[in-house]
Image 1: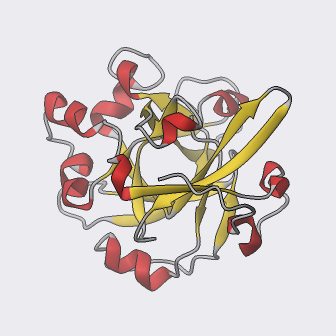
Image 2: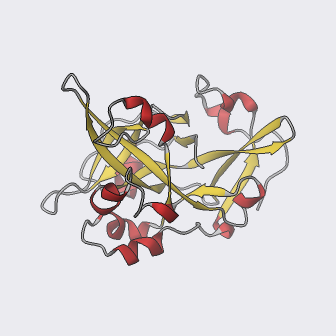
Length: 227
């Protein structure tokens, strides 16, 4: 799964990487948690350029009676997107990229949960494959939300956890966002990112609490880098 991630790059870099016409000022984040707002790139209509919006992390289907369902939908499994009622329509019509530069996963050893930070070797930005929805509450309010798609772990992440978020290659951003892309093509994009292009290392357990959102969340605590 993917339950925490980071986005520390400034707005201008996000704008350049995702080829956006404009980007709001982004505050560096080092320990983003579910139910918080995250930077989502969408292509809403063919006659409009890509745009970045801040959406609630934890997808709330349009038919939901209560927003609390979002806590159970921070991730969506790539293998069942086309069948699950919560995700199948969004998979067809409301795909997005969620901007990040690293994510966390926990290695369980008995009662000990050791957090690891996982990122690209070059330290660059990337986009998680995501879905988004628009939900109206009983009082008439509107909330847009999103989920991160996961797949089986690559050889690197498998040393920590059996699942990982889908990371879309930059050259495939347009394919993923295009509403006209065939389902068969989309499924080919939902695969583990190459392990040889990533690195993982131990970080302090302070990331266990979403209250801790400072640069030192990313610091390596021991010489245990996984390649």
